[in-house]
Amino acid sequence: MVATEIHELDRKLPFTASDIIPDSLRLPPPFDFERLTRFMAYPFIMTPLQLGWIKFLAGAFPITKAAGNIAALKRVGMDQLIFAPIGMQVTKLAR
Image 1 (tube, rainbow, N blue to C red):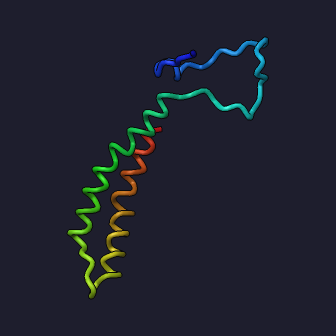
Image 2: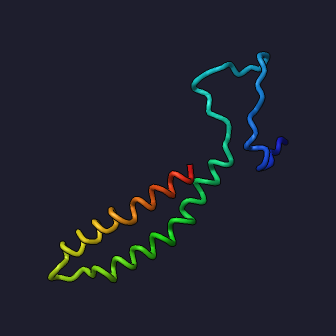
């Protein structure tokens, strides 16, 4: 039985010329544990921030029967002008 430890997954496998696997563009890249950790950490950081932001927008611009479309447009506008640039910067840091 072959077992692989998690810390071993990030290491690149050293293939030699005598290996059966030839050089090919169709082969998958080696496992990148650091990249996986960044992709997992992003939702854990951003979800509470997004939830608070959406609650703030719901309180600041309540959707009623009289002003449903206007309030929704205000929410979208505020989200795109204020929160979207913050989310983009966090995404750049996660790369």
